[in-house]
Length: 288
Image 1 (cartoon, rainbow, N blue to C red):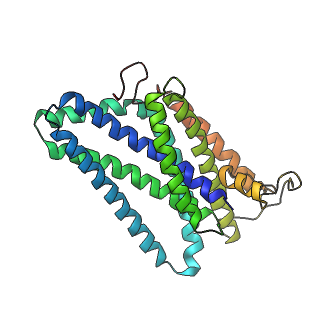
Image 2 (tube, one colour):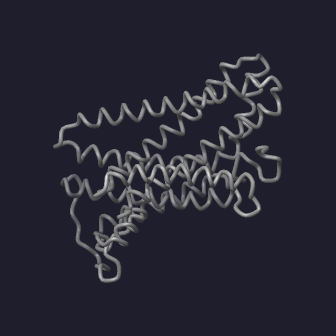
Image 3 (cartoon, rainbow, N blue to C red):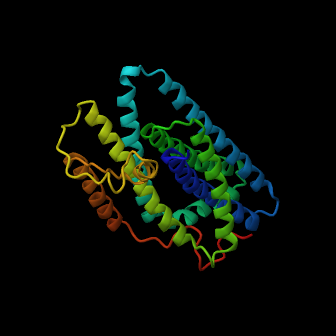
């Protein structure tokens, strides 16, 4: 049965995949229009491939290091990974809100500097670092999401990753060639909400784990909505995994959940509302 783990993986890979495609698309479009030799684009694609390899190496290192953690410490490790992923997701969303609109200009400025000196290795490095960063973010988010989920099927994260990549490719194509149907602004708004809900779910999972370990105080349960939607049922568990819903919340859980959303709202209000993004819809963004 497809559960919350599958949904979490799809959301993360989908959002981060589109961001990675967006960065490569910006770099490729600029080079296509400003580098008649085509050399820069070859270095671009080589750099993108190197970035993927770096991200894979990072993920492998994380996986190998986590496997050496003693069983007695694994729950603490998973709680920390979950809370760290939640914080990083919030940081990523707020950063994209405030600085994402400048990303295109920054990338193009860096390309102009590299191509003016025919420093093609600079193009390679720029692409490699950009893709490696997106890949590392994806791995850290997935680490937290998988640590917070209990799946009966080990195939869920694999299927979720495949579905996320396919959805990212389809979404990018739709955004490029059908922007009158789905705009970049709408895409980032929708996925922003989904990522923030996922971060809330990760926060609640981390709080639950720390409470069970006695590292947080136990508090009374406030209500029981299990009759309407149990967070242990097939649908309720999916909702809980994607949003942090609890059918029997404690005062501590409700306090953390409320504090999380208050902090998120305040952080988002401090950032400049973006003209998402990068691919300004009023300009000839990324050429076909």
